Length: 528
Ligand code: AMP
Ligand code: MG
Image (cartoon, rainbow, N blue to C red):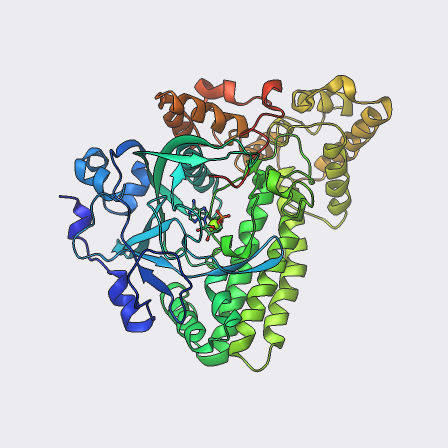
């Protein structure tokens, strides 16, 4: 028997019933759900569930031992084959702005919350992704395929260990069922292996959960949901009424800003920053067509569905974050009379983000004691990185080897491996780089700490290993052939992304040429 069953189960249905309205119609059939925050649903029974990989760290958060992750019960519960005693799974109702346009009701179309528990005073919701139809599935099947499930499982854990706020992933299972998908939406549908991931987070509430009620002018449910969220997830807020809503929005703004700074720090591109994919807790959520910057390029997006406008490109993520927060402010405005405090929080995002971003970039180049002029150095570095294909992760990692006494030429030689094709640098570009290193060298002279100390700081801030796009694809290709070794290799390696880890050195390498334009490596669609 899973220890989980013995824990204090919050039983979300009960706690929801007290405070939040549920959908009285208990069918999984797709429909519009009015005046309710969630609908009770039953996960689809998988034909032959098999565990591919479990995260022992996440299991432990829930009070499940590493041994228990190999049990039949674990396999059955986290594939949707069997319900934990006394639990009532549910799917949540939400809407969202997709690519800048209001899309109406979306909801948990293929996510089913099993239950919520408290373990060691921390509250966790467990959510299966890909366990079948819900009232919110619209015209889709509620299922997920192996490739996207591997990407979600590995990346959530990699992000956590990088220190980026994120939902976690407990387990990755094959369902034994096949799922039809048209990977590039180009008229070539094919059957793929079905899979289910169990995601774990304090809450999966999104901006869209709040927006849907404002869009329907249902202030009663919006207020219930907002009060519920503040009560359970924002314990610092002691005020009531409008003041509580202002404080709530202000915290969401801060948490979102922190998450976005972290994405820019590690070179993560979410790919689909629709408001339904924005966690109210400021966690990275919904790993779909995401990607990692290899050549530093503010204009890059891995999502081919967004290739025309590139709305969700790397360099645009902060602005989109602000745009999304503006939509949430519009929603909360229906609960208050005076909107000025909400506007003030948005304004704070603008000023604080600029400050925090410069601070973060300064730390990436080892400047612990920043001065005003550093902004110029940082801005010119960004221009330089963009000039010729320069691997972001490798560049910042190698930069830590530069010493104060290095002449510009020697300093540049230390980062040379980060360039995809050094030969392509024109004489003018090379000179620009050398000029930058002259300025950087001068600036380093003013840093009070020693080279070795700066190197340690930089290496704790600039990861050596990230889940490069092609690496995830290699793990997927192997898994499709039944070999899951690489999944565990990457999982283990990415648990310590800032450590040297010599056995994994071969993954500290630029993207291979074959992966440049390969589907799954640099081109991803929302089909998953
Ligand atoms: P996404 O772009 O993955 O964030 O999904 C947007 C909306 O589509 C959400 O409401 C999802 O629940 C829903 N959705 C995505 N894929 C499926 C699927 N295979 N079956 C049902 N709903 C889905
Ligand atoms: Mg989503």
